[in-house]
Length: 166
Image: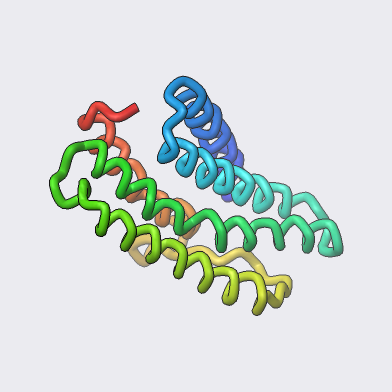
């Protein structure tokens, strides 16, 4: 069952990467590039998790997983800048301030530095069974943490679509 979920996630994130590329290619917006980087990183992440079901433990799987942690450290904080860009493009007054833009970029840079330290320099990969969370206490209803982490993406997409931003 969980294998099917990761196949679906890989397909959805691949499609989202393609759509992000098309938006970036047509508009050439720097904020769209940040979204493309993050979604491509998420695509790589779920693809490696999916491949981990088939690959044996060893050097190849370890190297592929190191890439996941590097992407998390470098790309995930870019979502903060992307979100600020959506708000800024939506015309909210506080987002038009250069000072706020600088603060957001400094925050994202600090988080990237923290991620590099925690996720790359202190990386110690060891094999573990996948971690799932139990939904509503029912043992047959196991949900991957990735799904729960992605839930906020869908409402934000609806909000973005209403703003007229690409």
